[in-house]
Length: 174
Image (cartoon, rainbow, N blue to C red; front, side, top):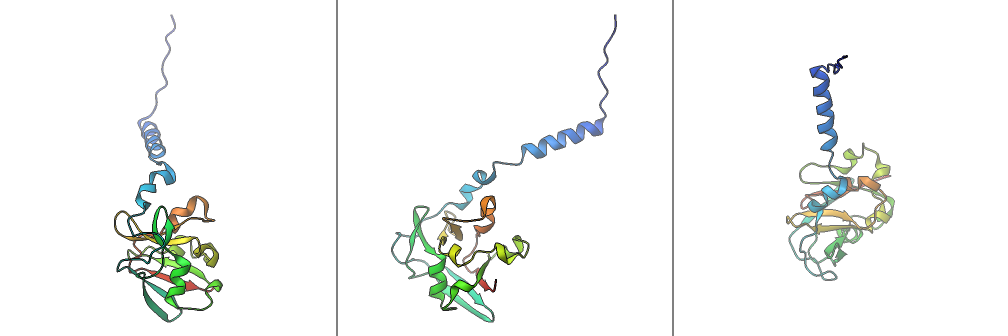
């Protein structure tokens, strides 16, 4: 009778296979796995002026203006009140021609959209995009940027900038 022998597999190969399995199985659910971190919080009634003490710095060249959200009319975003980014830029008064710029966002934790997009200004939101973006309060009570329409595909989470209370929106030449 002939005996069959199982092939001998080396221990490093088993470790490699186990490591690959763990890596692939921990990739997560994509955007769905993070969506809860981007939920909107209570910011008042859409259509009413923003209530709160949040502010964002708006920068154009050497000019830096701290712009409070208080009093800016809100719109409905994710079922709550949010300030449209285009309305916010207009309220800041930093320029009378906001259409000729790209917009970079820097959060208070140091996150910077331009760096995240490999310093490619063409990947930053333009004025048309700013009309579909909002500043809103999350469930955690922080100010965040969110978008109702976006051309960025699966990279949208990079554009949902958190920790914007005290952060910066910089206008850059394209």
